[in-house]
Amino acid sequence: MTPKHIILTLLLMLCPIGMAAQSTIKRNKPKPAVMKPKPAAKPKAKPKAKPKPAPRRNSTSHSGSTSSTVSLSAELNKLINNMVYVSGGTFTMGATSEQESDADPDEKPTHSVTLSSYYICKYEVTQALWRAVMGSNPSEFKGDNLPVECVNWFDCQTFINRLNSYTGRNFRLPTEAEWEFAARGGNYSRHHKYSGSNHIGYVAWYGENSGTRTHSVGTKQANELGLFDMSGNVWEWCNDWEGTYNSYSQTDPTGPNNGSYRVLRGGSWTNQDWGCRSSTRGYFPPIDRDSNFGLRLALSHL
Image (cartoon, rainbow, N blue to C red; front, side):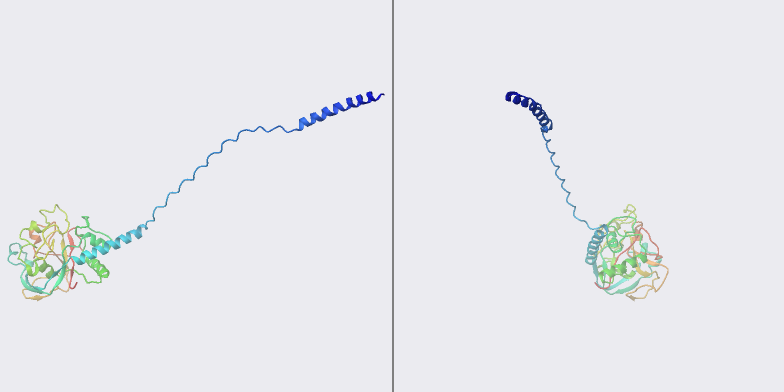
């Protein structure tokens, strides 16, 4: 074989090998990745702003306690400021001439009474004061400035004891004699039939003008001492047991040592005019409550 034939034979033998290698290279070459466009990133949601916490409020009980304390302090200050000084003196107690035509037998005989000086409140005890001290309101007719009612004599003592523990003073119910002297205007008395006037409508809420209910204290005319509602609105408990009058003179009387009934004075929104006179006497068992039974405070010393 000539060299030319040998070279040609070798070329023919190598040709399939090259094609197979090329084919192998082409099969194994990774396909170019299809570059899909990346989806736009979702915008991150902004975190919601947390609501600012509301200012902390005191618990109901604590808030109520603070409010009650403020209310009590305010009511006690008003009470002290409303105590009226009654200079001691001597007066005729009972069915005096201006009372005579309407006077009941228990208002007789008239007698001379001498009293030491004392203080008495300008107003009947209001529901606002009672609630501030007691934390409750027993009244049938509701209103801060209305007189408290539906209280018996023992309720009044409980109220007064608690009031004294708060104030360090010695509030009390007036004696019957103190009540009448103050209702008549004390040493400034003009000898009116009712407390402050001979015309009941000027000074009292009573059966003819009350509309069958109590009214705010201090809305009628005051008497000579500047005291309101001592005729009408509500009957006012006194400290005394009920007892009969005697003709002899007395000094700072406090009534009988015992009895079955406690005295009330002044008449009320349910009474006719004769029941609201300065010398009218009422008395009930000390356990009785009624929507026309209230109280007024006194003090021996401020």
